[in-house]
Image 1 (cartoon, one colour):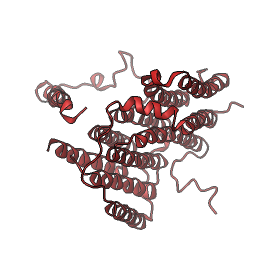
Image 2 (cartoon, chains in turn orange, red, cyan):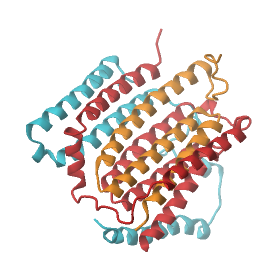
Image 3 (tube, chains in turn orange, brown, yellow):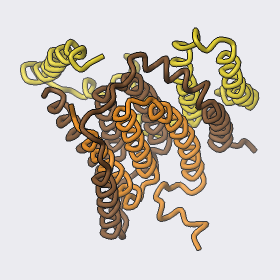
Length: 100
Length: 164
Length: 119
């Protein structure tokens, strides 16, 4: 039996790593991958707590989060593709039309 | 005992793959590392007795989301050349921020006392999830379908090339 | 299910993974190597390659992938619902009908918009 804390700490490390990737990478597609990783870490937390309390609500939430992740990735990558078509770059430092 | 060993192996595997995703210079390798980290998390779901979530993780995250990301890489191939550093200039501050985030989360988790025994997960978990989706959580369930509808229409509309 | 029930899967992995690894590694160690230009071309089902594989793909592929991801999610929601349909009776059926109906609107819209046409 692995203590629930270990799962939570693992999820926290994955989440922080994803956050680091979002902050430091310049490629928009890799930023997307890191966002997916963070959502995955949250799912891991939900499942770990569902297992801890013997309650399936956490697992139901995971499916809602998966739907949100799929919607996010479909729209987000479509936006990236439109930017590639118009500006010919996916470097987020060069996508600065709305920057103040 | 075997469970602890498997958890340790999968945790190290998942973290290594996650690190590869964040640091790899080649975007395609990044995507493959991401698939590896999804697979590691799927095995951990099985360890947590959430079989259906594990299968859904493989079908949705690896089968659909990672595929879509790899499609997007191939669709933007000509501009993914490695010119200059893959990191931006604020990486030191970002690393500090991520470390602080982890410290805050770890502190939060360390304050919770779960007791020693976990309640067993019900046997027919799939049926209970299905019942939960259309009874207790019916509003999030229907809102999810509207969200998917908006995502579908929006993605097609944005990605389409306009012919003048 | 307990962890012990997964032991056969572990044994299968322990047998299958080295087998696959050996099948890839052994030919590269034992096989004779006399490369020439024709052999090193990318295999294109016997055709002569006419372009680099690393070019930009048409955006239609992305349309199909988006449709796939949306309906993949739909199937994942359908599965647990189908398992528990016996207890849910007519109410569950109506709710899933609403869910599918909303997604059907999107499907018809995309169809009308011509996302399936390849020119």
